[in-house]
Image 1: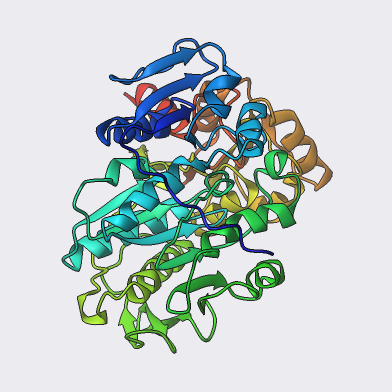
Image 2: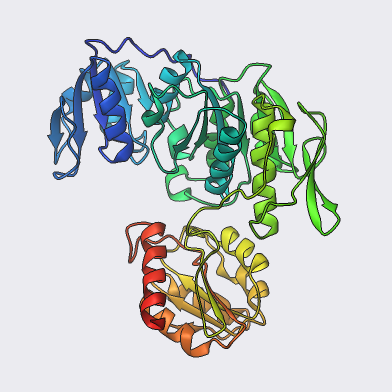
Length: 450
């Protein structure tokens, strides 16, 4: 894969800047540009998008002149690079960059180290763990990007290091995004409606490595031929997850340890005191530790004891009458749900549903679901999920929505059971995002059991 031309961020004082897409990322970028003295136009197809003081607002439509007449266009991740006005700016020779790349260029000027996490599953938790590790090591650290606060929020914050979650959307227009170390945790079918194919999806992920030099680190899952093929022509040292010569998870008495080979500070690090459950969380913390070490954090300053997880990831929201209710609303694809089923405590009542994703094969869930007390399907994709499970010999129950699924789960569950919301689908049929869905599930459970 050829490396893109070098992107140079123009001086912002007096620069005509257009910011496209005024959700959190666009607002944060516009605020930075105004603070740096730019002449900023904010544009959004929504008439009621957020406004930023000191900017000109063009809402409800886009005006082509704001794109081709700009000296810099900053694009929010929700806006594809193929959007006609964005493409016209590129064709006119206007520098066009995503919000993440814009912020990264300014952070590089300030000497802030970037450590990046991407992949299909686990990247939010891994980024969250990495941010905690950096802070515990004595660094002034920022955690954000595709998780929580946009990367632009870190600009001018005086941070030593940034733990940044990176989505494939954010790498469509990466600018000069240059992390010291970056990890792709895994690659499974996702966002294919935007990228078109798994090869294009992999190439988008690997753009994190494009600006690397020989002293930087690419971190990849072991034995992923597609990622290997894309990354082999890119610079940087290579480490692997869950396999030699990167990091291995090994027994340590009744617990586990991380064994590091051929990387800075290589040694064995005990996971005693790391309390997040499941093999997937051991893999997440292994990746976070590996990134911290590759970023130069000394091994003797790595502390994993009591690291916290994130909401909506295998989060127990209630235990009532001996039944545990677990919110894993972040499981928006089949691979995430397979991990949840592996780590959850049986017997299970499982809630599946939402808006399906292109190419999803729900029959893959049948094996881990065998033996569950009940499987309840809901939402826009509920009928498709149920059909796939019936073909595999299961007998799921249909619910009219998430509230009905919670009610049905309560009728099936017995003391000692776990009711697991791990939808294997996006949330946009009923909810604004997976967090909204998770909060609604928790409220429904609390209301039912009050």
